[in-house]
Length: 247
Image (cartoon, rainbow, N blue to C red; front, top):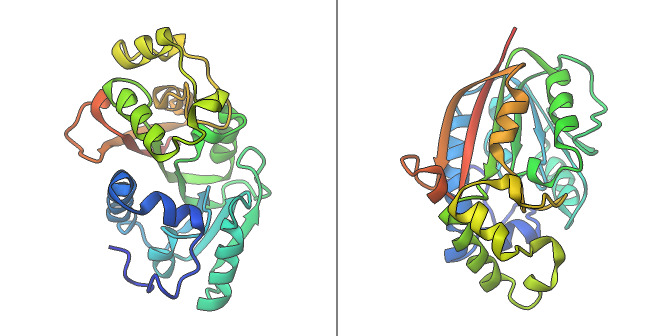
C-alpha cells in the first residue's frame, strides 16, 4: 500500500506518523487501504480534498487526476508538509488552500470528486460545510466521506484505547468526558441524542445525521464499514460513505 512515493523521501507530519504506527494505528491503516481501492477507480477528475493535511493519502492518486485542490487549516505543520511535497515532486496540477471547509474560496460547480476524510466531526458548523460541498460540486459529482462511528460497543472500546494512547491528559480534557448516562445511551442504545455534542471533536458526532443532511442533494450509493465491511455499525471503528450528486 502507498508505495508510489517512498515514505522516507516524503514530508510527513508528526500527526500522520503518530496515528499510523503500532497496533492502535491498524484501523487508520486499514481505512486508508479501503479508501485507496475506492479512489483509484476515479481518474482524470477535478478533485477537492477537504481536510487534506499533509497529502499523505492524496499522494497516491495525484498522478491520475486532472487537478487536485487540498483545503485545510495548518495544524501540526500539515500544510507546510503538503507545500513542501508539491515543490519536491513538482506537481503542477496540485494546489493547497489554507481555509475552513465552511467557507471555501472556490467557484461553484468546480469539482467532479470531493473527498472529506475524518473531517466533518471536527467542523465548527457541519451543515454549513456540507452546503459548501454542494455548492462547489459539479453535476453528477461523487462525494466520498469517511467518518468515525461514535456509538455502540465500539465506543466503549474506543474510550479505553484513547485512554491508553493519551492516558497522561485524556480525562482532564472536558471534550472527551462522557457521563455514565451518556455512555449508556450511546454505547448500549446507540442513541446520541442524549449525548452532548462538543465542537471540533468526536463526542456526539453521528454520521447518520450527515447522511440525513445530504439526502436532498446527494444520494448515498454505497456504505462500507471499517475495518471490516461486514461488521455492524455498533462494532465498526468507522464508515466510508459514497454519494452521487442528484441532478
